[in-house]
Image 1 (cartoon, helix red, strand yellow):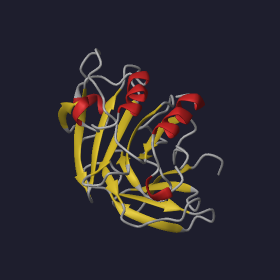
Image 2 (image 1 turned 45 degrees about the vertical axis):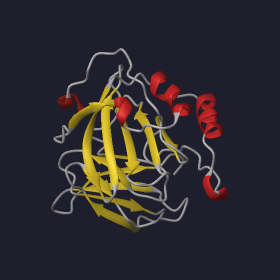
Image 3 (image 1 turned 90 degrees about the vertical axis):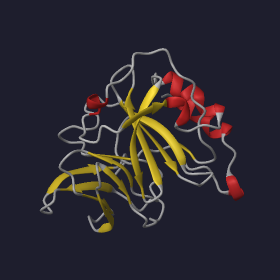
Length: 215
């Protein structure tokens, strides 16, 4: 996704209660189109692409197939992003954890795409795709963390038991368990405080440490 589209998305979403719209900066990746729809969800019509099979997600949680149009209904301004990222007519509902519903699929180019919906809330809904060649899940990418950097929520690879947010000194700011490949911490983090995302197995061994862009 190019900067022009990101700017259009930001302009299309009114900001509630006067809060500034945070930049759609990903937590993990050099080139990730994880665009936070702070103000509203996206209305997504079905795209004429081949249906995705759940097992191509690359995680054990294959979810339940739902229509893409039912995932984040109600805001047509993000529809263009869905279409440009070539999401098909269905996504996989992976479950709800700590009030956040997670949906995933792979787009026409095979990139992992993630949508989140804070159930019952008007805001904190979003969608995006990991556009890296070594995209999630891979040997070095064990967690796909959805922005903003003030929350720790996303999808983890098989074998990951805990996801942690680290500061610039490597100290743990927050950690949260992984349940069925999903994680959603209820701890708020100061903006700009997270320097890296760390994943650990059930024995506490570090599986990956993913620096944030520019850190």
